[in-house]
Amino acid sequence: MLAELKSKTRNLKPQVILPLICLIAFALRLGPLFDNRFHPDEALFSTWALKIAHGENIWLTGVPVDKPPLLIYLSALSFFVFGQNELAARVPNLMASVVSVVLVWRLGLSHVGTDGLGIGKLGAGKLGTGKLVGYQSSNQSTTTNLPVTNLPSYFRRCCWPCRPSPFSLPRRLFSTR
Image 1: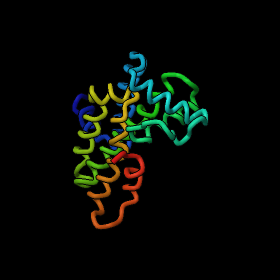
Image 2: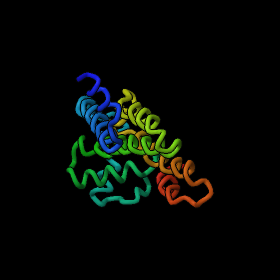
Image 3: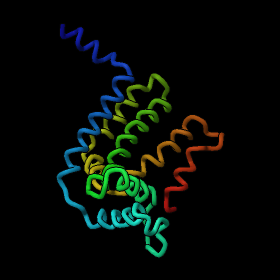
């Protein structure tokens, strides 16, 4: 019976493993989501997002924004959908961190092929269960969105190095450099 159980767990399909890793990553990020109050940077990002959500200053003209605007606009959308609260400010980073797990999985598969399923599992598992990543994704930090905007570009370079990239456009739009 134990040998049969071991063989079943070793032969899990990617259609089962990836959602399981994403579910674990999502669950691990929910704990810190409610533990901590707003950091001063989060309050600043949220005031910018609230200005956008209320339609007061959509382009943030006259505001010295030194961060990529993706987080601010996603937070504004989240405030519009979920209302004005701390959870709504942190939902975009929570979602971005789970999406980055999927992108790391796909990058591992594309780098080695279907034989690289172990690399995809390892990378996604490490990113999904990492303590620092889990903490960063539970607050409104701009570092969580960076993998989501950069990983598709890396994936494109691994698979199709000579073609123009449709994935480089989001990175160019949402980065400050």
